[in-house]
Length: 243
Image (cartoon, rainbow, N blue to C red):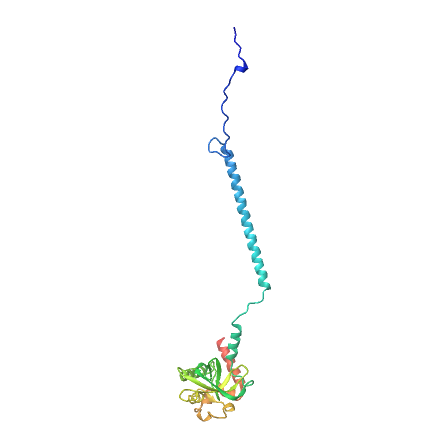
């Protein structure tokens, strides 16, 4: 007799369900899928990096353009030394007889003297033309010699200046004396490196002039006589020699 199996009495043991695989695994995953994922991520990073570079470049260009606009619209920079340079340049010009005036009461200054040329010194930032004489200019014959003679006289000494005249730029004319009482103007005339200027000195130093000094200092003599064309001719010859 054949025995029938009933479904009610049939028991079948099923295996436990497999665990879910993670998104990326080291074992059992498709290597091509993993490579595609890596390539995609790398592409995203490259695009992000390029975008950052473009933004940085755009910001830099914008800032530079704005700086140019500010430079164009801003006023020119102020040179703090401009006024000082102008003042120094004006103080180094010769004493201007046309704008000068005599002081009602002469004033006095004293101190170490800086030598500008054969008849000009500076004491305490005041430019002083030696009273009553005319020495050659620095670029004229004997001009350097006259300057260094004045340097030798004043070196290491306090010079006392009695200011008698002043021009509109603050440059002055003064009778200048060494500590032993010697008159600087007289000393230069006696050395044959300056001549008396009677128009201003009233001939005080004429007797001190050495023989032949006016031929020696012929340019200074020409200036006193109003022969400025002699100066112009000399300067043209000097300019031609330099070229």
